[in-house]
Image (cartoon, rainbow, N blue to C red; front, side, top):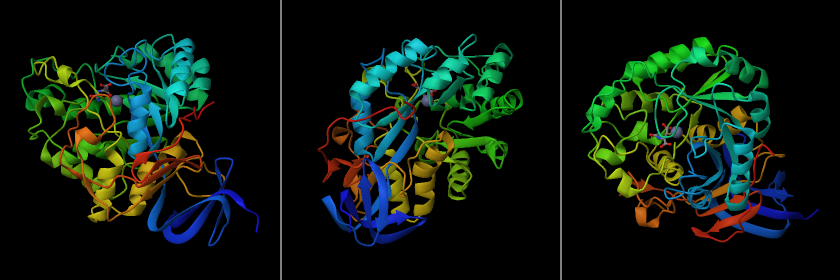
Amino acid sequence: MKKMEVVVEGSCYVSGRLERCCVGIEDGKIAKIAKLLEGDKEYHFGSKLILPGATDAHVHFRDPGMTQKEDFATGSLAALYGGVTCVFDMPNTRPPTTTVAAMRDKKKIASAKSMVDFGLFAGVRPGMDAAGLAKESIGFKLYMASTTGELLVPSLETINGEISAIASTGKVLAVHAEDESMRKKEIEKDLEDHLRNRSNDCERIAIRKVKEAAKGCRLHICHVSAKSSIPLIERVPNLTSEVTPQHVLLDVSSRLGKLAKVNPPLRKREDRHALFQALKEGTFDIIASDHAPHTIDEKHEDFDYAPTGMPGVETMVPMMLQHVKDKHLELSGFVRMLCERPGEIYGIRKGKIAVGYDADLMVVDASAGTIIRADNLHSKCGWTAFEGVSGIFPHAVFLRGQLMIENGGQVGERAGRDVVG
Ligand code: NCD
Ligand code: ZN
């Protein structure tokens, strides 16, 4: 029997079910899956689960320009501890990632600092070079309502040409779907006010408009948050969708106040329940964190001034694994939404334990539950909206065959690279 470079043995999730076997790894890729394999390096995890590493298709690592909140080193370390071996970073940095030059600069930063693999979104802006940006980016991101950053495109008529150009690149157009003209601008004192300013219709109308205006594009609707939006994203050809843990686990009745001020807003309990139900039924393609760190001082400003967004890249997988353990979510759904679909939608060989895929793996001990504590997390922002919530953090994590987390602690060398090239 030919020896593999690396062999990982355990209860592996292969072709939709768990089986006790070995994953053979060569040159960072899965080369063979068999009952017995020998390797120069062997890792035996017994009955622990071996799952594909997760891809978080929506993070804001703030680098460059807002590194007091986060940078690529801290954000990606948080990702790694949370079982996320690939992240797609959003373009609302400073400068925004809307030019090829800005894209290349960010790529240099991320290549030097990232602990996990990454893709970079290009921001949509009138006059941008879609063809040039497509070569460098994982996809395009469009902001239809004002939020953190300066990438607002208030009217889709101003970007007809850019939308056609994106369509011909074949890249995904990911959309922050809130309609700027529907958004109210009343002063906000609490989460209820924030929700009133950004109503369910504000999201629904935006989704309707972008579906109409971007017919030729592969559309991806980010962070769907309202019950009334669900019928608009279900079974639509060329359209995929995403939901965040915060929109299925928290609602406007949260006592977290400003910490839970996010865009789109946390909505009513009935919205949250409808989203969780839809999530269980497989309506959404992806669960992504929308990891949007802000410093605690910024979050403690008056409600109206406090920035929107919360961190989540490290807590997403642990909380969702807890839901699998508690039988609120099937393991197959977990793997599909957190691992497989991001890879399929964005065309990268990640998210499956199958020959030819990157050997990104998380090893999970389902009996080892923990309580989430901000003190134990790795984002620079230092706080979480999920303090005290139960989670199952990965016992070990491999990035392209390299052991990066062992016994819940960091071991590997920094090796993150761009999935686009
Ligand atoms: C995000 C941020 O802070 O970058 N904030 C948020 O509330 N989700 C921006 C965004 O995605 O709207
Ligand atoms: Zn976002």
